[in-house]
Image (cartoon, rainbow, N blue to C red):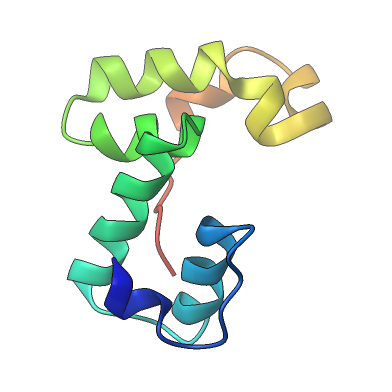
Length: 90
């Protein structure tokens, strides 16, 4: 993770430092490090990254944390989770 933080340091927010580094793209390895950092920080996006290979678990997490992730869009209807397709990296 240290190599990802080699740009402008933001010691009070290491996740933001990684995000800034990844704004221009990033390798698959760098995105996986970011996913691990999110998971370690207790961020729901990290849980989604970790569950990406288990569709049932992924959809359950989306439903459970929908309001946190998507705000008022979740008030449209409950069927959106089955139709949504996400990518966790740019």
